[in-house]
Image (cartoon, rainbow, N blue to C red):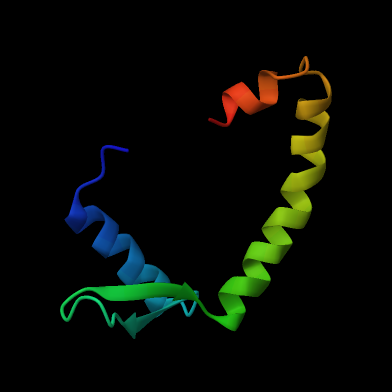
Length: 73
């Protein structure tokens, strides 16, 4: 995606500060943290999905069989 580790960390830090993400200890790596959605993040994701899904379905409806699968590979 062309993002540096530092850029991703800055974005994650902002989302943690906003209460959308939370960090958890990673049992497989002492220094790395796991990132997961908070309840607030889950609610925002559900709202965004509800708004986006009808548009995605409209776009997918005009594709020929197999085109959607090829686009999402």
